[in-house]
Length: 487
Image (tube, rainbow, N blue to C red):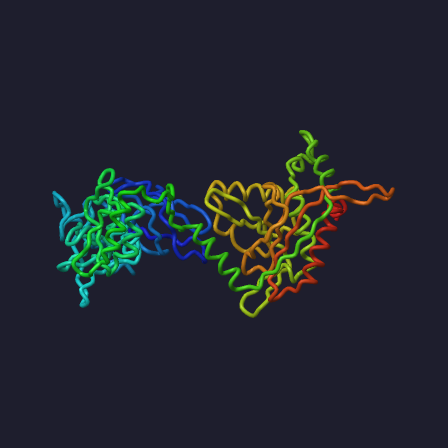
């Protein structure tokens, strides 16, 4: 019997995954361990194996779809097997079978195909509205061609009574975003002025975009907009639109609209919730790094072979991570989570380290950092950063941090306001090193390097003075880092 491949659950907190790329197509033969697609969560990118050997009978989702976990994404079985029957009998798959795609030649009309997509209009609701997804409606509106229902069929507005019929390729004949995108490809784009005019006058005010405009390659400009029979559009508005065509359109330059989705959307939502659900307060200080820099300079000179060879790759950030891991146990209220009305403190330090990746900010976790040596912390930080940047980091390596460190010093930032990595109650921002005047014992003024620290706390559970004492202790540890390494 055919195998229904479901979207796997990538960790307990992952609710959905985005299909980044299909590596196979319908009709391909696969083995059980063949990677059929890449999926993206809020944390990393993973390959999904076929699970069983056979032929790819059906791909149920499109590239770019955000699919809930445990939902069917493909059917794999023997060539010629009835995949629809297998899917219909699969647990939880009722109603997930896409409608068949009729083979129809010629231009798109009501009830026929639109650019190869199923076009059988779904059942009309009592209020004469077809089942239409919000994303489909928004895409049509953004393109300046809203969806209207005429004679029981959904059509894109392209002048009175014009526009291609929309087919519904979603479950139960539902019109989804890709159906609208396919129909829009058959219509010329609207200029910025035309879209603005439709926004100002089009909805219920008597304007519609024609199927072909007078601009380059049929582009619809403002003067091409047609007054409809439904409303008396002010003559001044029509004259204004006509004048807009004669004069050059307002120049805004090229505008690119990029959907916020995947990890970027998750980051946006988390940052918003973090600020909305906690009382964040930031303290700034600096710490002298003369001994730290001297120590690192000595480490860099360690040659091969040597028992201390691992120290030659230690960075300033590694030394800061080491200092944080040693100071935090003395301030357990900082190594904590706020969950509802409960403060959960931790004996061990699971250190989150912010990593900049092409896909966005990721925070892998150095577990039990307070029990690791400097060279171990350095090696683990580098391993996790490489895994994040390469997309191979595991979900469990991105959860469970009790305190986070984020470093922008290499980018020239001296001080900033880091946002809490909830439910943690504190996060340390590390800035760059600047020279500051220091009074020497001989009365002379010397300039020495100082590193910037920005500590954000949740003031709901951590007060300013205790947080300041932690920051002061951390600064002293950095200033005397060579002594802390002897513990």
